Amino acid sequence: MSIENSISQIQAQPKTWISLEDIHKSKSQIEHSQKLIQVNNVLKILDFPDNQEETYRKILEKQDSKTLKNLSLKSKDEILIFLINTNKILTKTETKKIWIENKRIATKISKIKSVFPRNILDKHPNITNKLDSLDKIDNPIQKNEILEDIIAILKNPWTLESITKDLGWVDTPEYKEFRNTLISIDPTLRETFDRVELNQIWNLAKIKLWTDDLSGVDLDSDTLSKTEDWITTSYSNENGRNLSTTWSNYKIPSEINPKYEKDITELNTKTNEELKPLNDNLNLVSQVLKYLKNAQKSWIDFSKVKNTIKIQNPNFYTNKWLDNITSFDEMIIILNAKKFELEEEKEEAIETAREKIDELLKQNTLEAKKQDKKKKKVLEFIHSIWFDRISQSKTNLLLDYININLWKFALQEKIDLQNASLGFDKDFWNDDINPLEKRSFINLFNKMLGENLINENIANGTTSLSLETISKLQKLSNRTTWFFISNLEKKMK
Image 1 (cartoon, rainbow, N blue to C red):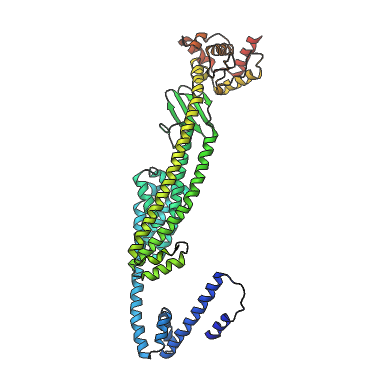
Image 2 (image 1 turned 180 degrees about the vertical axis):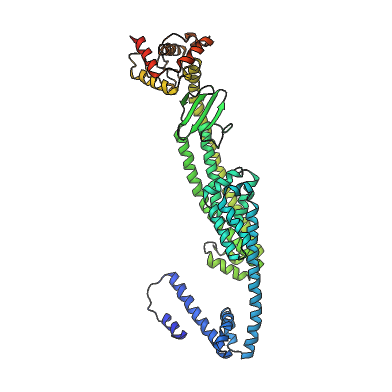
């Protein structure tokens, strides 16, 4: 089928509803077919054998329609002179393009190697192997593919978080250099870095919720804990938040208000939603800036660059602001200013989230200190009578047994150490445990022990356990739960 017939068929197609994409596609087909006709017209003048024609056809296909039209009006010799000169220019241009691309890839490789310390590479052999393979390959296309593989690995938040942790988290100069260098290589990494940084903010916020303060907290431990005076506050996923003394393993649960953790999680989601469009715009501006700088180095006509941006990024070309820009430098200045503005918006969004978190933490700390104050007094009391030196699994069973038989032991209410209730003589208008409650509990504890070892005056803070009593308690603490229950039953008869 001839080219003329192809065009006629395209133009003769029935007029039905078609999409904008179909229109562009048909238009491109027509333009391409028309260009082939012009190329063939020039080749007819040259009248070369088929084995020579192909080389010149490739050169002619790179020319615009106006040039081809002019060539079709010239002699064979004039066309040949044009083709020879053009081929020299094209060869030189192609060589320069290859050199620029090789230099670009070499710069990327140099940058990415410079920010990976040996201790990190040792922990991530998948990255190390790919970096090492770059030295053994000469093909720039293969090198670029390996770089893309490395970037893909870094886009995994778990991998990036592990590396960030080894660099000393987000506030260190090493991390900042690492982050900025990789984003300069691939702007889309910005979103992964944001996710890691925000996760750190939320995780540290939750740790503060659980422990009230970061001082003394070991972030690498499975159980997060801090010690203040003689009380240890600890948190683990398995056991929750607990208070204990530094002298025993006896723990009193002291859970935080779940509202604050929920609020922080919701704030995390909201902030990520706010950052998404900012990151999208930052990535677009960064990509256009990179394209502009490469085009400027390659001496590409600025009007063609503007047109390419308009076609490839229609959302970027709003209100035709590009029409008023006349140079690369002017456009680069404007885009850098826009990039700075977007980064400031991001910082502001993150800072606002930090401020809201700080406010939530303050509210939580006030609540936690209020509830912990009562629990600390309970811990101090049970430690003063050595109740906390008996295995907590035993004492929990004993307290369950007692709470089931309140009437038998003349309790007003259940013993609930978590809520500062000793079960006896409670002042319902006062949250604190009083001396009468303490004396009643000491009497019950003596019955469990089978003898009056604990002096009631400990309730008033006027005396303490003697060495002889402590020695006896140490021996009794190893007795079975049934031993203590039997003692209680005997005393109740």
